[in-house]
Length: 509
Ligand SMILES: CC(=O)N[C@H]1[C@@H](OP(=O)(O)OP(=O)(O)OC[C@H]2O[C@@H](n3ccc(=O)[nH]c3=O)[C@H](O)[C@@H]2O)O[C@H](CO)[C@@H](O)[C@@H]1O
Ligand SMILES: C=C(OP(=O)(O)O)C(=O)O
Image (cartoon, rainbow, N blue to C red):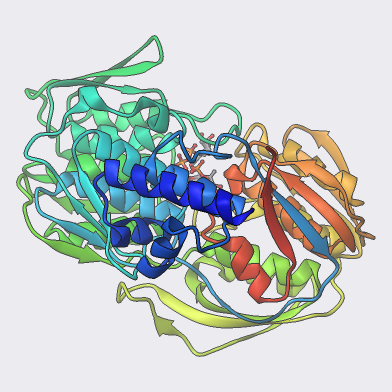
């Protein structure tokens, strides 16, 4: 950019900022930069990457400097490098979304410490902001402060943001305490095939919630005559359905027993958070939860969600496919035990540190050092189960791992109608992936990875798997349209680059 151009862009940014009534420090905070950097940008004294211009456009919500936000973000990956060093696992997407929704139960201020700064969180905060909830990232931190209004304004809901996530379904539980009737746009998110909604309706009907689907909306009415409590039996052991039942039970005046509850990591985090709100829950980490509700919750509270087992698995797979020794710190070990045992049976070696506790005071963590070495295909097919089982979201990473192991591995994703199909995106990178049917792929290793250009499939984990294969493939690969990865991983390209990867982002203009 010429100096003159920088001056003009700087002035545009300054004017747009002033129009939004933001100080330089406030803009700097949302850009995760310093006030002095913003001052230099506005004076035309700072070279600007397209990426930064796009982020400023987003932060100021202005067309003026919105050069490229509407075009997809892509990655250029120079692969074939070994990784080395240490990396911390960040806190989980799925606990973040559960706690964000749970903050709607509280009339007081909720602070979520060290929250994952990911697109999924951005979409939910956009929805919360649109209905009157104030959210603010505390300076120099990833702590999100959430302050509810006296009354939520559901008519003002940012439907575009809501439709980009499945999480909107998890507003049903909190909102049934506030409104006798309301509507929410239908859930969106990754395209993994049809995902059930019925178990949520069944669970919440015990609290008087009736939902009709109409023209793209869930239209909800609440019958306050229904005496809830007693026992709710979930029709499937889903994570978010358990969370919705917990939201409903948390403010119910009485005791609710939830059977066939998911004991998975995000549900445990939600239970720990609800305990901070004064809701007593027996049986945390089991399939029977007994919830002693508190009809009025009004207290300032803070909670630290725990580390993400799926990110831990992703980093572990990155080490395996690039045959690297890295140390993955802060691994929530209880939620990785089956994965590690399976990997050990495939010949993987690793060291684990003594355990320590996550900032929530509950979740057990350990540091894991990967030791590169040859792997063999497992004797049996790999398939997931609700916790405690091999995590459903960790399954796709075994496709990349199977591709580097000697022999044939059958991967059976019985859970999602579409997700296994996306694993065939590894084919252009040299993997031998045979789709047996929509749920099963047979992978034959080892693979001689080669660079390729691939469009992200519309699903978070398979897209991440393709990125990991690109890290292994010598030469320059291009991965297009990575919003879907940014939905669940924070700053992952920079963090992988710190381990020695070479990933650059760019936008099509
Ligand atoms: C925000 C969040 O926390 N998302 C997670 C949550 O989504 P979520 O709880 O929304 O998962 P879904 O309800 O879509 O369940 C996933 C699929 O598993 C099926 N199913 C689930 C449980 C069961 O006992 N039997 C059964 O058949 C469902 O019918 C569905 O087809 O759980 C999924 C499965 O672990 C994870 O992939 C998601 O990352
Ligand atoms: C399927 C996933 O999440 P979500 O429920 O947010 O779509 C995932 O995390 O892989």
